[in-house]
Figure (cartoon, chains in turn yellow, red):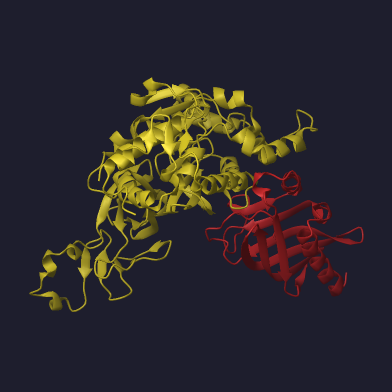
Length: 435
Length: 154
């Protein structure tokens, strides 16, 4: 089980320029190394600041498999703390969300912490006098994690070493800007509940699928194709139900998805829909467009509303759909188990129809009862089962591979290229390669 | 409508689903009927809050036609079993009977089987001498849990 831990060259050898070894999806040791190396060294989505408006408000979550707590400070800033008692290691806060009051208290021995994670009180503290306690790790309390808030989106990096926030994400952050700027006030808030869909497959299958423009017309023919047929007899000017407006574009042609385009950035980030997307033909909302022009000026408003990127992957944890204002978060649990959480956002100052669109879309596509999700999930499971079998150990990522893409930090290509996956694995090997 | 007829209707509905008689099940819904599986307890509405499912007749028709096409996720096929407690009639709201039926639901596929449980609330109306479903709301006891695919009808 220690085949890879002590052998960085063996880890690096799993990724070729145009192929990847099956162990990246199936080997439990590789999964553990991802949780020790890739997730801690990168910036992982921890939550949205609107979820914790008041001092002491918190949400709990995980960075990879490490429990954390995102909590609002008395000075209004946001911190991410390790959710693990400095004493016996118990998870200190077990609710999904709430308010801690001034102190966070462990239920076992009443060690209590300030909202910044520092120790406030230990019962019978004199018992530690004259011991080595003052010099041990426990004194640091619920150790805070490097945290960065970008337009309300909170990211955390567990490891002390790793790239800076802006170095890591670079120009890919524009997808968050374009999403948030769809609010005439330039702000969004989480609303409408979180869908939690358990997948019995490796986290990378989900993340890769978001920019896989070759699967919708195949895997989603049964759902989008049926939607198209059900609406086929309607006159062209019949008002389209939102569900039809949203589902039918999944049945777009290969040509549509290819021309949609795809853009990749350093460190594994990418988005599809560089030129247009399945969200391009939603009905216009004239009053809102006027409000956007007042807020941003004509040119910028046109730019914001004309930017309808499909999915943006903030590698490895967060995927963003700006035209709909929804995000999906990948939470790895085991090598073959991943929880996908979908959050909806309300655009401040925008008409209700946008939130209704968002709620409809996420229910139709991201719910455990989604007719679209079922077929994706089935395909991931089939890959997971198939890769477990001996046979060809290499998975082809050759589609539209060009050697010159290897060092590109910002490149736009055709939509059906497998470049986003190759780009993700180049980042993967970079963060996984060293012990 | 007598209480016995309402109870018989609800048992019949569950049976239609387990026997995959989807067209007959679909015809039980009013023109403006909905099938709703909320995401949270006491969820007040489905338009401005995400649900696990909220389907009008168009979306129910889509779900049924898709299942009939044997999509990728239906190899192997899923099968369901509803085990219903005796339905209770909660009362009447205008022309609408409101019923409450606690249930266990099993969905099997290949070697895997998942169990769900909760309460189904029906709003039933009488149209042309027969009962029709205006709303079937299924409150799962673990509606907020991380759930795997649920492919058939609760």
